[in-house]
Amino acid sequence: MGAKGRRALFLDRDGVVNEDYHYPCMSAHITFRPGIFELCRKAARLGYMIFVVTNQAGVAKGKFTEADVRSLHAWMRAEFEKQGVSIAEFYYCPYHIDGIVAEYAIDSDWRKPKPGMFLQAAKDHLIDLTASVMVGDKETDRIELPGLKCIIVKSQYTTEGWDVETLEEVGEMLDA
Image 1 (cartoon, one colour):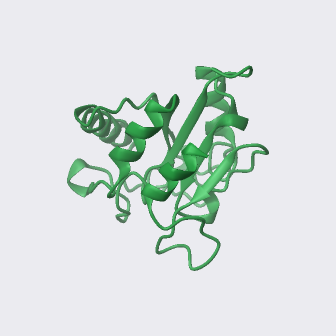
Image 2: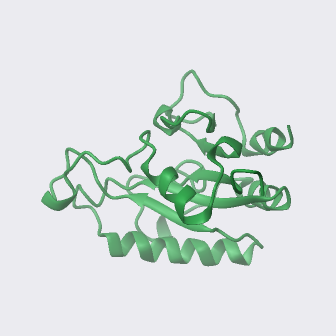
């Protein structure tokens, strides 16, 4: 643990942990990305706590419920544990300003690229955000938080501005 706290590896869910699927809300929708378990095992060996941070606008848009999100995350946590990986916590943002479910149709500080989920993780788990890394697959995964290193993996959403092509390359960057 550094002077300011532990370091964390933050992973976007859809597109980094699992293949992107239009509003995934059940285990049948999930195909884990090649290299995700290896990356997480390596990060854990290097002393990183592992978190999943994900925008889940499908809640605000009426596609599924928060209970569906929590159920899927419980299943995913168990799948990671089978691979020898402990996920410290899943953080998700159910809000979207254009939502159709009134209670979720708000502009939230938890919606990436805003830093709310990261600040909460830092508070909950004594995380040093300046020693931590966020891995995403979209420009909105470049979090508005000075000092947090953000790595964007090439995807269908990044025609330019990506940092690496594979999760294996992310693992190599953790060594640096």
